[in-house]
Image 1 (cartoon, rainbow, N blue to C red):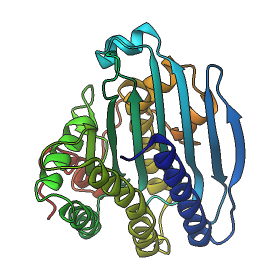
Image 2 (cartoon, rainbow, N blue to C red):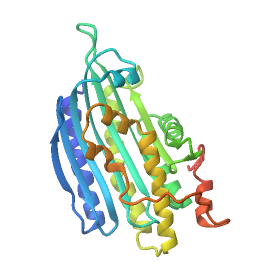
Image 3 (tube, helix red, strand yellow):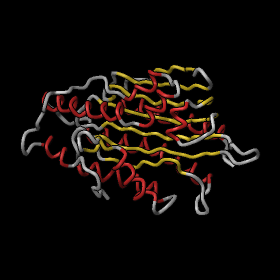
Image 4 (cartoon, rainbow, N blue to C red):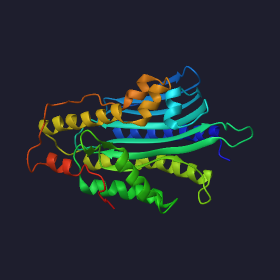
Length: 303
């Protein structure tokens, strides 16, 4: 049986590995760490990197928290129990270069003791990884999705299709009628079954986490030396505004953190350092910006 202590320990190791890889990728900036404790139980390690050669702002956060669930969260999760344990690693990276994409990853585990004496705890894994390019380069999109499919296929032939569709639906900005980016994979409440053990799910969770560094390193290095104009930088700020809108309006992790008295700085580290909301902005007809908007749709088959 995989224990919550083992899961939290492995997630901390993945946080360490990713931070080392990102420092090597940037070449100059290093992570600042703040260890924090949560009122009510648990805490975490917030790590932020800023003002690098390519990484303008990024966070790689680990948390392991426990305590009593607020009524609003219990209602949202459709559970009756009060006690909970949750641990995970959450990452958002905002580059300073409009040709380099924003990336987000999260792996998490949630557990509640059984309401029946001697019963098994209620538990599940969740997570995913998705890419938000300011400019969609189709070759990069195919590389990203092919990499994720190869990770999924190691564990279940149906994972990629299921979780890619889930990501398309989840990372959708309804009030804009566009996806946040080119998607990726997303899953929640993944539990053991006759065909899937807890050990397999945990290994899958770790594999998703460890897919982050190699795939993002490749995408950054493909694009970091490209030239760009002031107009393209302004487009980057425009796209960042859509990212902020999604996280503040729809993101479940943000809502959970705020409703469980999480650490505000850690929760909102996902927001970009600079974003712009230009009134009724319309991209130039036939330009790369318009092309990108046409690719921010559900159901595109990248592999």
